Image (tube, rainbow, N blue to C red):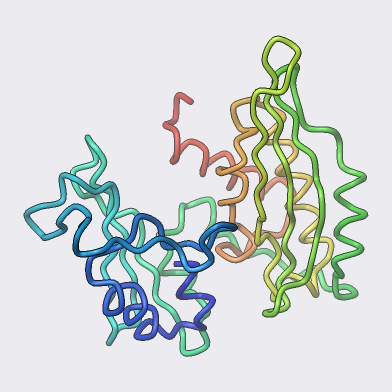
Length: 246
């Protein structure tokens, strides 16, 4: 889905690259430091077969509907039985249709605008440095950097450090495409979202999950603007992702 957005909704070009130019599939298709174009699987070392009646060897299946400009994602993990995770329709400019993103009830709120001076990467960095520290004795989160992308979105790079017996066990770093261009003219909305994130993550140390945090896309998906509304959305996402009892 990130590739389709980067291609400005040109699904045909993504299909051409991911499928037509790599008929045997990929071991991974996202760019990495050692493999900028990802790792393609060769005919000699073909990956697991994927067919409507043969998905047992794969975890997720993506279906491209070029005419409808829609991308569907299905989970074939054990116990999921091919359930649809989401269905995203992209506009001619690559903007995802928010109402096609399987919005949770908490996300359907549409609150009054909070207009202000357009938020810059430097201002966002200053805000992050002023937020309360997120961490426990075994895990800590550190905001590292902010930058403006080619699409004028603001990205946040952060690091989660995991400790064990007083020593660092693991370091996980993520780049989070957190602030879309549409949210930058509403700086207080962005601030409310970040403060709500801190509130919700502080409630449960398990939420110091860098992959879960970097997947939060509420500023794009929802019309929420108040801190309390953002907190409700984030809690609902946690319940959806990990179960209401989590």
